[in-house]
Image (tube, rainbow, N blue to C red; front, top):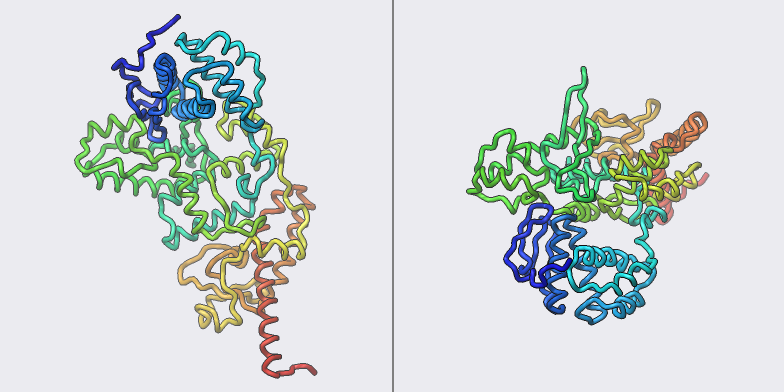
Length: 519
């Protein structure tokens, strides 16, 4: 069938899958809080192709995700600009393909689907010759999981040592007031769940759930699913269990969100409205005088939710302020939402979980994209001795405290209650004036308040940790269990190295002053 060639100039109003209205003649289409299409460039097309293109794109906007629709606009625009044509011809498609490397051939693969749908819908502009050409092509698909397969230290999955350092760093910065409650909550959800950024920013307060199960409580987050074909925003959900600690953090965060929104709007909201508030709001979209009826209607959509790039913006800022280093690179961790996702899948594969379990945990509808995790299980260092620990320690920078020459040089050095020992000897001092329930001295070496003494028996602690690691591995045959204290081993190793350097400095200074202690 052939449809009206001038649909692009009719006043019909369309609605995107996420509930945003637009007209074909509008130069900019807003499809959701994250996706905006600039279509001014399309006016250069032949009139017939122009009308058809906008009509097909509107079909995509109504039936597919905003991101997918935006991607089609980008791909078609790229084809037009690189070939210099104003319509769709076999010769120009062949020419366009010749400009693409094998790594970018998937651009044309995705565009092919769009052009075939165009023809299937019956809009003019796509000839049978073009369709036959497209049918005959075998195009390389988009390579999936490259960062996972290579275990890339900058963009691939995080190691256990890196993840442990990150979680400790987040708590430390939050407790010191250097990380906001909102950012702490957002990064914690990403780190614990491995969910996509769009799923995090689509959460509402009611999605954080605590329910009684007999004498205990179960805690979970009801995540909206993403990348589901023909599914509208927040149509499908998948519950993900979380710890009580994470729930308590999110409960504190939700109270802050409710209070701030009610102060901005000067509304006293009922329980239903509060439940529908975004867990991570875009506060700039709220204003004084917003009436409750309008608010409740727009809460059905994503108007007040933070944009999905908020996740990576927060992570980028955290990367530069947390001071958490990778033991693989010696540089601050580069954090993206995808890295947490890769980490979750990789850890499950390392535990021997199958593709179906990994797909379920990552909220995939099938197993076609999870094989890379199973095929590329990363090795944990099987054997750690002092030589290996000394080599990795300066890179990891797991020790967060300050080395002092003696007890009298420490903060609270005159307080015997500040002493940290292993039951036999004292190792250092605690510089914190607050209560601490952590297990000393194990937790101390990675704590910012710990002040190890120069002549403390730190090397003995290191040897005991390495020996215990070997014993656990020998008994359990489980590398992951044996590696649970690897970050601590690196922190103690760092202290030993610092002590050795400091002692060498003192010896050198004494020699330069002409003192001879030889017998």
